[in-house]
Length: 116
Image (cartoon, rainbow, N blue to C red; front, side):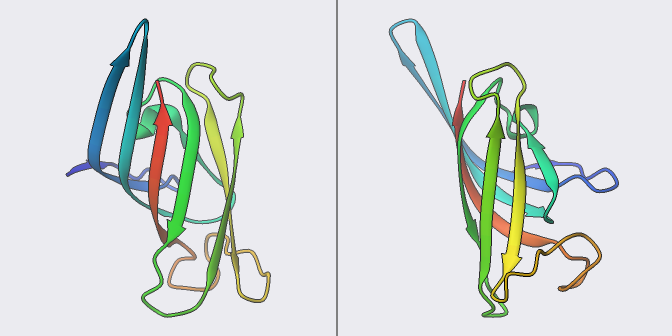
């Protein structure tokens, strides 16, 4: 397992698995892991060991059995070192930003990222 350090309010990322597939002239990379993140934070392609971020699937971990809705927006898909903006909401529709709600407002998310 590889851990990407957390600076101030950036996500803490644990990478568990990286798969690289070469097909013709292209290379596709799949990365699986988990991240500790709050709403309104960004995840950059380089933090996920990718050059470009094209797909990001998020699944919240729910040890406290409270539903969390995770949404993302990937900026400039396919461009070098792009990023995704993450939004997290609780069951009432309240955004889970840093410093609010659970402990420090962060939530563990499992992720599957794909890119080059």
